[in-house]
Image 1 (cartoon, one colour):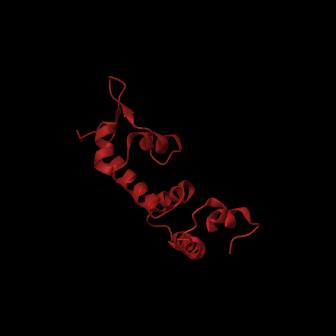
Image 2 (cartoon, helix red, strand yellow; image 1 turned 180 degrees about the vertical axis):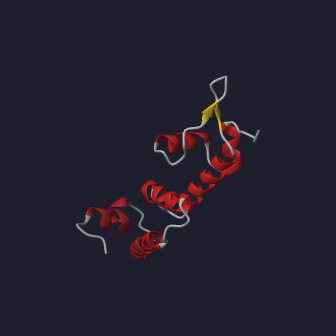
Image 3 (tube, helix red, strand yellow; image 1 turned 90 degrees about the horizontal axis):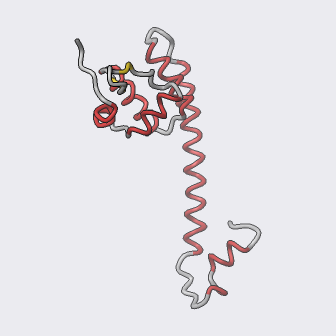
Length: 135
């Protein structure tokens, strides 16, 4: 008989907290586990691997739906990789856009920082937030 794990042990082995494990079960990224005689969830080594896969995908910023697609590819290694490649290209474009936005925000905040005003009436940040646009 292969080893099974409690939800707490699964969390420690995979690096995912218990509430997140339950969420992944609800959204069907992780199959419903078998239940022991006491009604507690029992997970096998496949669940540990699958959950670690999901965690790594989330760390890379993939959505739940994207991870669902990637899990289908992982479950069927004979399928072509084109869908994953397309997903990565789209994800990279999204990340590049976010980086551009963050750089713009950093530039705007640097221009507003350290105004040395003694009162809020002359604070550059307060004035910028009150204006119609921030460049």
